[in-house]
Amino acid sequence: MCYFICEKCGEKIYPIDGFLSWQREDGILANFQIAHRKYSDPQNNACVTLFEVVDEDGFMGFIKYLIDCWGDGLTLEGHESLLRVFTKMYEYRNQRLKDLLYANE
Ligand SMILES: [Zn+2]
Image (tube, rainbow, N blue to C red; front, side, top):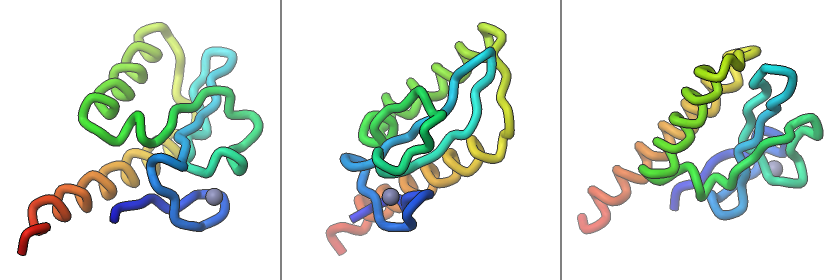
């Protein structure tokens, strides 16, 4: 079964138990992270469950949200956190696809 690793406690985190959170304040987007809710950084004031963003529609919706934010003039502070989140989502989705493809072998 596919899972993420919580950025705060280092434990496995399944999409149903995990959250993608970030800070949206004063025209900036910052501090994207994947974590159990109880460990999310307190300054992060926006979040969705991982379950909502790992499927095709959710992933596209998240990208659209970012494009809309940038279109509205928000800026990304510290791109590393968003890059890290996208890398984790890519790895998760890649593993899930492999599991589906080879499930019957
Ligand atoms: Zn955790």
